[in-house]
Amino acid sequence: MIDHVDELLPRLSANRPALDLGPDHIFPAYAGFSIANLPASVAAWLGAEGLPGAAPALDPALTGALAREFRHVVLMVVDGLGLDILQRALASPEWDALPAAARLFPLTSIVPSTTS
Image (cartoon, rainbow, N blue to C red; front, side, top):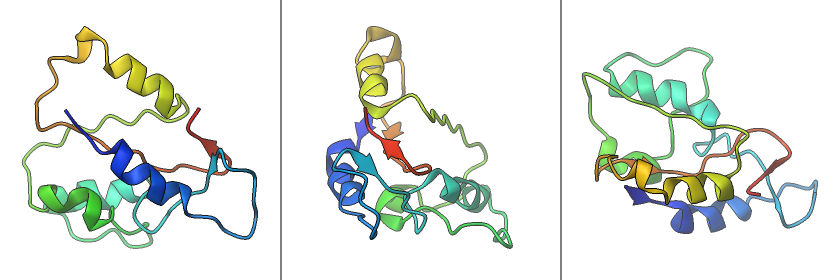
């Protein structure tokens, strides 16, 4: 699996609006780095037209290698688990069967969102 956490987490952590809840809090990045951006991305991958009223698709920095149409999309969203716990779980042998092209992207959710 290709892990993009180290690459993207600093960018997500730098998103600091006027409300400061401390350094451990990560604010939503609805402009392309949020679970809210998943429906438009999956629709595009499946060849569907845009979704009126929906958040935009994921940022091209995440989907550059995926920017084409697919017949099938498998999406696993784990919200509320915490990135640290998910990374420890993925290190166990049970996940070794994931395809090498599988990707792990940290996405934001709602406020307050933490990585603990």
